[in-house]
Image (cartoon, rainbow, N blue to C red; front, side, top):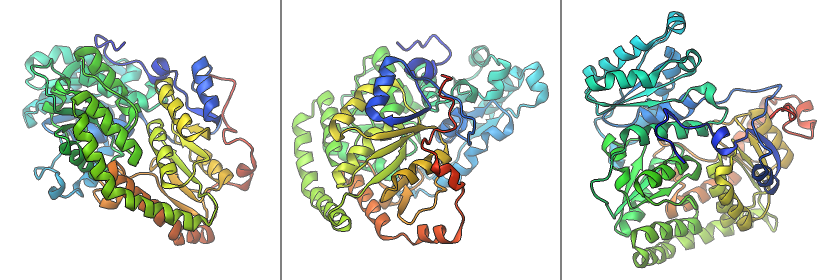
Length: 500
């Protein structure tokens, strides 16, 4: 039950029994989660990780058209947006990026005095300044560790100034100290959207499909999903990146909410169904040929397009299956009778999509690495194990040393790293990223739909053929970690397993 009377959502630890450390079989992980024997654990040695504010929210919220982002924090907490501004600028206008491209964000620049006496007046001033400067349709107020520590009443300030502000003010409680799991940042954002922005439907749009797509899916993926839905007479409502305020307001009018990432979409999907009766499904995501088929059929079921979708799937198979077969044969040739093993670092949403996709390509996944895990995707993970079999899994939150240890242990033919999870290990086999981000508009970075399946397959093939960078790094630079570390039997050596 989602309670929109509350200022924000529960954390993933509270709502989903989330955990940040585990090593063992995926089936064992599921059993522990079901039995309630999991929880966050402390590490004696811990490397940097991402916070709810900067890892998830700043680079997404700032892309929303007709809006202003106010980061209620010390000035450094808003700096991430600067880099992403330039990343997104690389997307050509010809691919759909608006020519009038600019982001509007402010910071309240909290200091020691504000920590002692409070900064409510600063926030009021920032909100009024945002309205005067930019005349937006929405103003997003993002909380921070500092505002959480001093107990800043952001919701109270919003309620007080809203009558004088034309834009809708959206308070998002994404204090980094709230949770060790970045998934909580997803939920906090969607709670704010559901509470403040989504309007009651004036009509139902039977051809509209809500697609909440993460930053880690590229511009090409948006185009592919749009293309496929258009072939069966449907339109996507992509949120949150580069969407308009109006697109959030009409989320309640859609025929269905479809996932690209189940973990990312879960809170929004359940909230829209609870409040407005919009149906949803969480599995599968459109990654790989087979799962794209299933995803399209699920969308068609809720939109009455069952006949149309079968025709589209047949047409797409005629075009793309021969290309998939070429990739499979290439992997067979490279493997020379042996399995090619792939190890990927990913979030729990990608765990559900990438592992079956690897099998489809003809490569194997003996183990996986997951940022964190919770019981909100238990059913989907059970389906995954039924589909591909059991496998080893390391759950760790941005701990590069543990990733390096896990990679050395399994020594896969291809090691795929999440851009945020660290890849400072040295090896002479294949190594590359598991995905690109929204600002990468190059065709070979696609990963969703039929086009993305072939692009990602060819990308993996290239990794097996060009290893000069890895070999040079191995020969010319020392390993980041001492050999002692790799000799430990458990990648979670530094985790206090008694404290949960």
